[in-house]
Amino acid sequence: MRDREQWAPELRDVGLVALQASVLARRIFDTRGRRRDALDPARTEIVMAIALIETAPRELTRTSVESLASQLSLHGEAVRELVFDLLRSGHVRAVHDEPGEDPAGFQLTAAGWAVARAAVERAGRFLPGWPPAPTRR
Image (cartoon, rainbow, N blue to C red; front, side, top):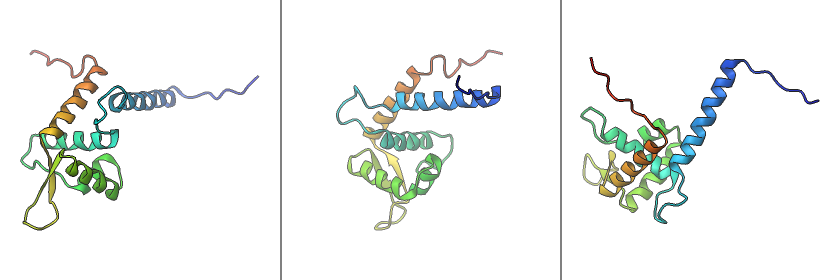
């Protein structure tokens, strides 16, 4: 007979949540069955992050490589490469404070907004009933 470890209910709950989060992310960002030119998961994450920043209720509507790296828990150089790929593909545009300087931030183009909206709509299919309807008082 094999030994079977006994987990406390709290530990098991953490494992269930982590597993479901992983499965959900894979399902939302999966590229199978999508157009050949669909962005890969890493680039889709960048586009979604920029969309969420741009739609936040505050005045600053651009983001830097450093802020994206922090938000997505990725290395800055990896994010820089992904963002510049998205620049080349026309999904983001650079925002410059001064002409000729490095970009101060990035904003989505119409193509980037289309990718972000599609990703959020795809995520919504896996989150039935979310967000909950507002309650009436």
